[in-house]
Length: 70
Image (cartoon, rainbow, N blue to C red; front, side):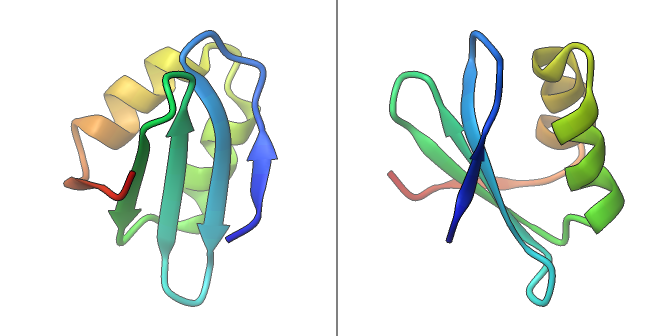
């Protein structure tokens, strides 16, 4: 999955597969988390967020179950 770099102290990059509604979040420490059932608008919101860490914590981690893939 191609990832888009993100300017964030905790999130290195994001990837999204719209067909599968799957988002991958690469954290700065090297961990990659996968979240299923994520809408395009939630993914876009994280890309555009002025504070990506807060958006990730509030809209992703609390709403979706993540699976560590790396």
